[in-house]
Length: 120
Image 1 (cartoon, rainbow, N blue to C red):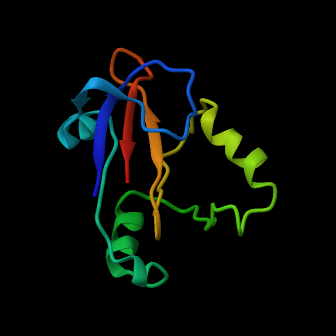
Image 2: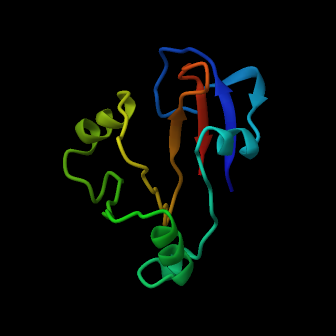
């Protein structure tokens, strides 16, 4: 399930969702307009998923890596997750295939405001 919303400015823990009060949802169509695409695929078939291969081929995605982000499996977890809370951008598109759990991503809108989160 994907949820998207405008965030409130806060100095609280960046791992929290930071919904405004009241919340201000963002439709998936708005995210598509920003170039953020979403597919629901079968996580059990990620290694040989024909639908994922089709997406990668159509969009010319060549790079792929697999990481496990949890305290039990990622050495120096607390230090390493800090990098995810610093703004950075990519020159190329990026796929995030979440096999288990959830994640938050911030996206700049067309006015270059960094105030949208979406959760997978």
